Image 1: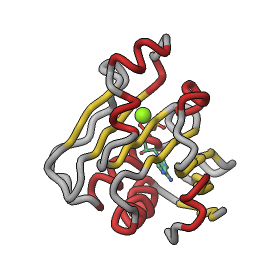
Image 2 (image 1 turned 120 degrees about the horizontal axis):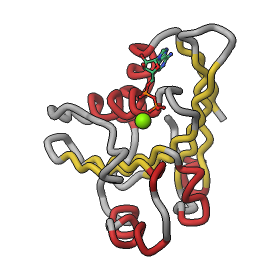
Image 3 (image 1 turned 180 degrees about the horizontal axis):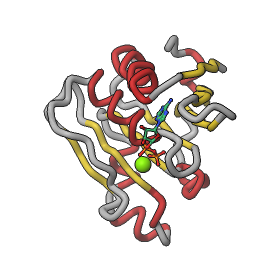
Image 4 (image 1 turned 90 degrees about the vertical axis):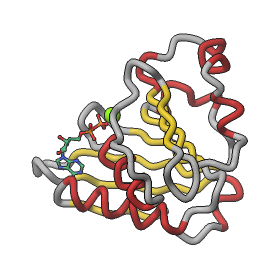
Length: 148
Ligand code: ADP
Ligand code: MG
């Protein structure tokens, strides 16, 4: 497990950017953390690290946004409003999870049973200081062998 502390949004994005430049194609990142913790900010940093040129906006209402302009496709999910396993299947979640792109999932706790066993769990938490966040990175399955 790796734990970092960031002091502002830029540092969170920078940490994510660094991860994106090291991560294997086809990886899966599950993001956990309350509203406003920084899951979307983290995803922006990932996109930056993949050289994605498009602006990253939260897929809260669409559940999924895909970005193809970078070194690998980015599939950005937000599970806040997911209601059923059928819906998850319907947006192609299980196919994207097995693809060669990078999947990143906000509100991963809402689909816990459906996450792939090989993944990075990343917990973003608040501290007593307003702009400070803790970022815990826990590799699961074969990802335990990855050096991030
Ligand atoms: P989430 O997707 O988890 O709901 P967002 O990324 O949309 O959260 O928003 C995070 C908010 O917290 C932004 O307004 C951002 O500026 C602010 N913020 C303050 N400090 C940090 C930090 N250290 N890391 C990330 N975001 C931070
Ligand atoms: Mg968000």
